[in-house]
Length: 172
Image (cartoon, rainbow, N blue to C red; front, side):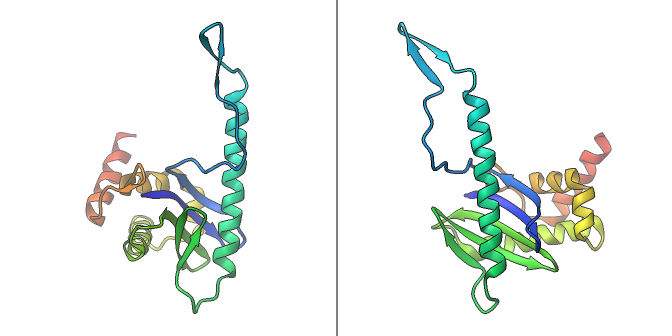
């Protein structure tokens, strides 16, 4: 299962970030529900605090993934074991495409998935570049959502995915 999908440039700017599973938090938080007189009530500031911790943890992980991927020598494989999952990455021009998956998943299939996603972007934008991704991020997310759903690969046909995206554009 895919944990997250990142697209980062050489400087460390995250251009696309899609999290399918929340990041593990290092700190334990209290339960959002607290018992009082046998009833459960929702803590008012729990969701805000938890959301801030989650966003901070995502930023920390994204920075660490960038550091690992960019500093890695080209003579090594494109697979890195990181925490509870495996990072599979590929560099295209100045962009690093990284997928974090479960340790037991097949690395080569996800490496091929990255390549198919780049082909989808290239077909859609006609020779894609980083600026296309920055200025059309909503379309990039739409393509990614048609390709991957809930951490699993939904469709592998390039023509089918692009046809769906074109159809969804007509609805707008």
